[in-house]
Amino acid sequence: MAKVIFDHVSKKYSGNVMAVKDANLEIKDKEFVVFVGPSGCGKTTSLRMVAGLEEISEGNIYIGDNIVNNVAPKDRDIAMVFQNYALYPHMDVYNNMAFGLKLRKFPKPEIDRRVKEAAKILGIEGLLDRKPKALSGGQRQRVALGRAIVREPKVFLMDEPLSNLDAKLRVQTRAEISKLHNRLQTTIIYVTHDQVEAMTMGDRIVVMKDGIIQQVGAPLDIYDNPTNVFVAGFIGTPPMNFLDGVVKEVGGKFIVDMGPIKVKIPDGKFKQIREYLNKPVVFGIRPEDITENIGSAPDDEIIVGTVDVSELLGAEVNLYMSVGELSFTASVDSHTRATDGEKHQVVFNSEKIHLFDKQ
Ligand code: ADP
Ligand code: MG
Image 1 (cartoon, rainbow, N blue to C red):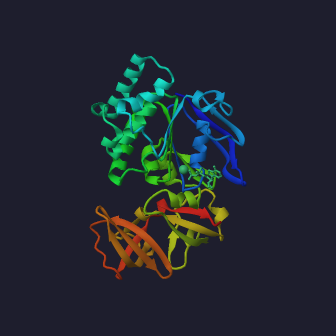
Image 2: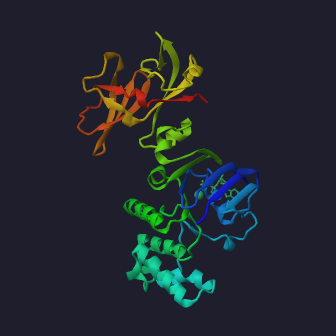
Image 3: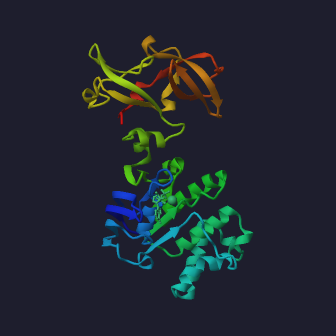
């Protein structure tokens, strides 16, 4: 159990690759933090610096109250679970889990206690005498977690541990890792490129792009208040709609003018709205914040668009719509019947709109 701090941490690989740029972050004791971002954004490098597997070019990393920059990996009291969880094929599950403790010369009864306890937590007590080849992918992944749990580390580091599992098992194991966190009460730093994993698992999410931390916050906070177009587009599915517009003042009210679509900005919604006045902005709205006109909307809020394609997903329908040269996706409930090519009336929920600086 320990906090982990990134204090102005940068990593430069040979060949001038800046993999991580001036990262500042305080991960609290017992917190479950998820690093998320596209491939190559510096997630694994960040984790490997905490583990001590990668030298830190600039800044300091703290585990607990200590700077660990020059502490050997084995002395950092951390355990890492990788994507490619190589188990020893000739050892049974018990010995795969016990191996690290044996190396560290733990007494036998202590090893036995820890292995059995971890097996119980993970629900693999019945598999202890099996060899890895007699296990399913999900069971192997649990053994890999078990190997980390028996170490009773202060901090767990997990690098895309679910990416080799099929979709159904991934969802199941996702929930198990969250439960595991509740049980173990340990700090976990978890890395994934999958924004759904990040949204569902973390106490807080750290969104990265090109080696730079873009935003840190609770999942819903990031979802509701993304700080830039990248974060807004990366978190949430189907992705947020972005349209180019200009903020105008009409009769004392602010609107975003996107040509064929104009949206009223509710009074007081954006504190800095005057700074946007008459400037190009990126207007954002999530597909679920576009609803069908069920007859109650004022005329000037009704948007009549063409349904180019509709996609029935089960509980909802994605309508890929256009108005003139503008296109957007609306995610509406599945009672909606829309034929491709037909006109359809929708309303943008103006309380849920976003404005971003045009880069
Ligand atoms: P992620 O885990 O988010 O996919 P990484 O941390 O693996 O990203 O990589 C970040 C950047 O650093 C990438 O541009 C990658 O090519 C580069 N990189 C990673 N490891 C090395 C290395 N050992 N030497 C040089 N460049 C590296
Ligand atoms: Mg990686």
